[in-house]
Length: 572
Image (cartoon, rainbow, N blue to C red; front, side, top):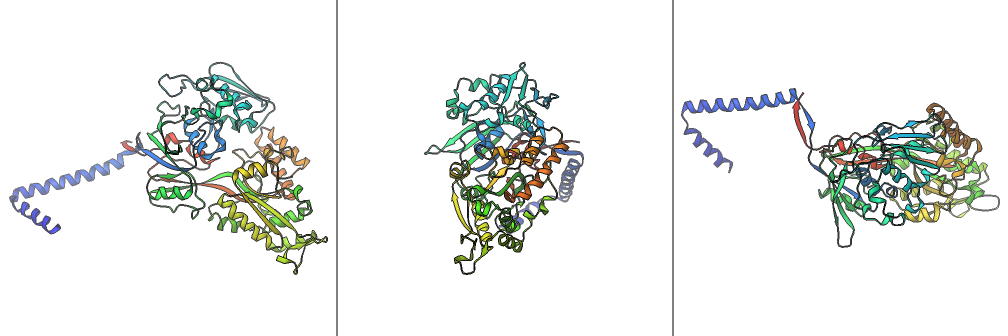
């Protein structure tokens, strides 16, 4: 084939005269030089810029139910989609600092630290033909709906004893019962349109079609929805909101496809049905292998995985601080991070994570964080739990001949299952018998966490952008709906947490948090294992991502309007 083609070209070439051949050679040289000059000139004197166009398709595990910021926190899929459809008064920037969103500037805070005066940007509109303005009425309606128990918003607890009032069309005043350094983060919740929701009673709020066909002021709006024969949503498409107040998105269409398992998600990626994966499939070789056209953005979350100790359920061993310390010292955290998380996570040492306000640099060196099997065995012997070589299984007994037997409960999320098995092996190696109880996520919440019906609980807590440990460790939060999942109660610690929460000075807060941690590690109410991380797998064709850290995986979309696929060159 090639030989035939070359033969024909030679025949044609021989038909030209000598002068014509010279002219053709000169012409080829001129064309080549022009192309070379254009390329060199273009790169030297022009720059590449983003332009509108292109589409991106991402796969998620689960089903959308409530694309509604007031209901979304219960589902990662709903959180993802709500983030691109709705805007809050404020938002988090790439460094997790609070920044204006619908608000014109950051709130003006009163001298007593209780009143927030907020002014909306000018010319804000809800998307649609009517160009209906976004006003203070929408903001007041949203926050009152959160406070109304009929709406059953998971955010309601954060808005207790808060008053919200309209000053004029663009101004809102929010007043808290007491000064709080952490309240401002609540103003990042998405605002919903009053004209859409005001005629829907709270009892029907979760049933409305607008939870699946939402109207928000975010960067993208729903354009298409596809269901299968069973009625499940299999895909959704979102179009760019050209009237977005922070600048119209470059990408014209975002598409999401929904899968029931990580196996289906990974298969869809390898089959090129999706460009990226929004859910991290820990249970399939932990992570997707990096490829030339795949970016893997590893983002640390303000989240830790820990074993929470409820000594009331089994006071004989757990009421003794030496036993709790022995449990902590016999846990090889590095081994868990390596074998379960493929070294894609980092070690957690206490209730305040590295990089957060008040982190205590000496906490990693506290006894509870030093892995030492021999020291753990000695602590158990000192507390009266003696290893009986003749006993079945080689477990420890006390003077009353009772075997030390502890139960550990967690959910069936694959990493938790594997961590619980590793903990069982580590603790039984020092003579403590461990019974595992593995339940679904829903069962864990309903049957165990709410009633505090466990001895040891393996669970993860996301502490949010602000390190405020009050909701998680103050003694007043030991019962549902509080988030203190242990029996930890210390008057001095309570005082420090309360003072820090009401103090607007970062340095004063940090000092109190460090004192709190010193008390905490001496008590050992929990055993910290690892810090949560999120690996975002996205096609390298998408540019403009500026991700450093996120509060929740949904925060990867914080600057989605700046993402781009198509480019153009302009003069420098």
